[in-house]
Image 1 (cartoon, rainbow, N blue to C red):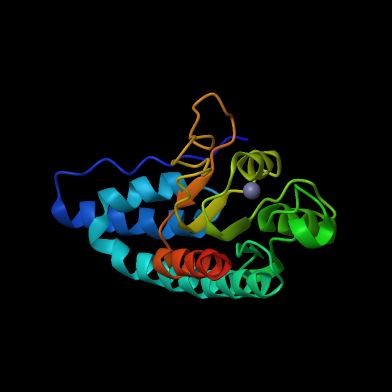
Image 2 (spheres, rainbow, N blue to C red):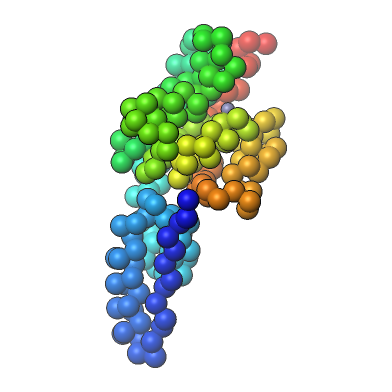
Length: 207
Ligand code: ZN
């Protein structure tokens, strides 16, 4: 899956023309943000004076959906599962949500991420999940990172790192392997303290 890249306009010798050109470019590019985020990010770096509004709005949305993922994680803890929660967002709305279900379902693959990917694919009648974003409280493992690639999820947002199995940057760097033809935009550390606290209190209560 190729990403559409945009090149910023060449700066003119006339400062006013340069500014107008930059503004037009930003307005034209921004609507494509969901499908070409890495490129938009590089644009935002170049026109950083325009980015605060865009970034703040996105951060707000990320926090909102991560709170929902945390709620799923807490529910999973109540059911005796390792408290990891996930929500799959499509067109700005939650399409699927779950916590881990491995113990309840006697299924080693029933991680929260796998469950929401399966459910979303079923609801969309499509095994490719374009225009989606996956929110998960803890850094995904290698199995889930593989599933994210198979589903062509464009964006992953997670909370706390998992030094014992995280496959995004802690133990492996699966999504950033340059040999893959699908690139996932990753945001980490969103409500990381809360996500780690849920996990820690769960294991502390079991000791
Ligand atoms: Zn996993």
